[in-house]
Image 1: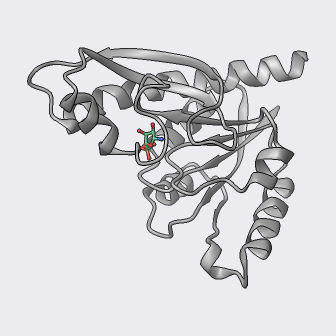
Image 2: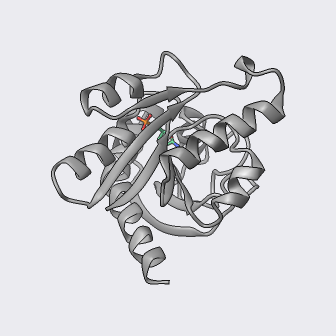
Length: 197
Ligand code: GRF
């Protein structure tokens, strides 16, 4: 069975959507670990509920950046993922890891990339900007992670309407529902493509 590792810093609802899809046999994936930089991440509680091993790893716990990167890479290698899925992970992935797992790191972003992507566009900031600009639609995108924030090739996206009465929270909720359906499916499709190549 294909193995994946998920990185999450926050609530972890996307992590749970992947875990649930795996648990119910919708996708044939084993999540070998959850990695977070945040000891308070909701994702940790969700991992426990699904019996998925979790690891808290933060640069501050290491003597220097080199040691941090080496430990993170060692941990990932031990978990031997075919694909790494970033799901609301708020730290930059070190370039050594991006190189080692080229084309194998995916991310989900709550906008129709390339719009509202890049530095500063995360969480509610994305939805606030979409509303401020009076957009009539938004959505979410799954893309391959490269060295530049949110710039890797987009594998798939889903659109949602934006309503005049929307708040950043109501729009976030509508987008998140699409994310939960899109991300597990695209992870599985990407794994299938990798195993065919
Ligand atoms: C999602 O909106 C995702 O697109 C973005 O971060 C958020 C994570 O939400 N990258 P959750 O922690 O999965 O609930």
